[in-house]
Length: 494
Ligand code: NAD
Image (cartoon, rainbow, N blue to C red; front, side, top):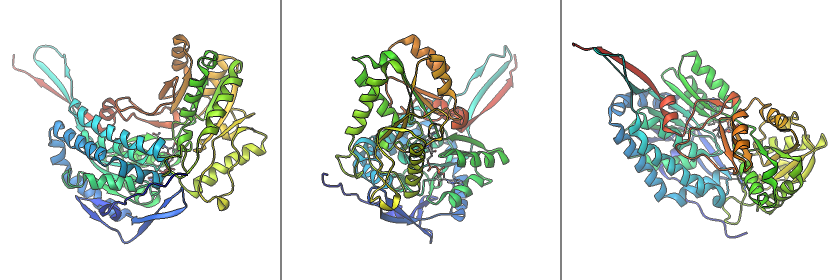
């Protein structure tokens, strides 16, 4: 192990709530833990229904002035926040690694750079909030505009908090809405540091943050009658309840939920000249380097039986080479699962599969939580499981992949689609016809071919089926999800 990197904490941000342009520290507090060491990093203010109420009122007051600003000015402020985040990149990345357990070298630096990229992207495209002119013939002129929805309430999870937070901030503010953002209780620090960087940037009330637990602050935001739109990223269970509350008052909602994404390997991708790249792509898709804690993890691997041996040998070899360690250790490829509860859930899934007779190609059932000095499970690949086992159907959200051989294309597509999720999918082949035919047949919102990369700003991102509703990450998605069209039709004197 190399020396662990030091972190510097937010200062004002430890208050936990940024409302109407000022920091507020509620009486209640929340401990933020470092899952790599099982120790408390710091304590932040914990907001609840009262802080949500104040923040929503501030966002409502700030709305008229903000929505009237030229989109270019709103975009310029987002771009400036992106620049400030880049200027503080290393400091924010270390905070992120400490609180999420996501390894600094493989994950947290990349996430911080990606988050700044999202702000920069939306800063540039904010001016694309355009309407249309409709050809109704002489004497009739009709045009449409895109108007902000109003006050947006955004709720984000802990697994990729900065990137997701910057996405929500960008989409809401670029399109002229005002925002109340609720970070995840497990990982609020990087967002609070970002908020410090934004504190003097936006007019008071435009951007508000209330840190708190889901059942209190999150639930209060979801149920608030003066929130016009909810944008939620997190588990399906909570997402369903957020959608129900939005529906009760006809508020708009965007949901980015879970996944159990298939990864299909065709025979040509296992050929000697391709197998290394394919295996690395599979490992990337599985997000082993983020402990598998990614909604898009390609956690169901379907490998053609003709190339099962070489592909699985390589996948195991790469997974076993990965270094598991403290998230603030430069040597670590993989960090720690975020908390004891999630660790225990992952352990239960693997223990159940082991009992049912699954074969470990690599990895093992994690040690019980009371024996774990850090929540660090090792990458685990299981074979001898069916597509209908619980471990193949439910989102484990840990570094656990099931591998299933296939021989018939129709059957593998049917297995891939036999899930209530539809977030991402991964295809490995060099044949364009195979790739396009398979992409067409897969029920997923996002498909990667021949790698397992991440989201790129500008690409509409979101799921089908129970993986969510709406698209984010692109200007098209933001316009659909954060604005409404107004049509104006004029009778002209002719
Ligand atoms: P979670 O649903 O438990 O929590 C997400 C957020 O919701 C947190 O801020 C939490 O405080 C809040 N929350 C919890 N209960 C609430 C309630 N009753 N009302 C309102 N808000 C509430 O999810 P998690 O465990 O933090 O994150 C993991 C999940 O997120 C996984 O299922 C993963 O697939 C999903 N996820 C999806 C995407 C995507 O883009 N589709 C991205 C990342 C994570």
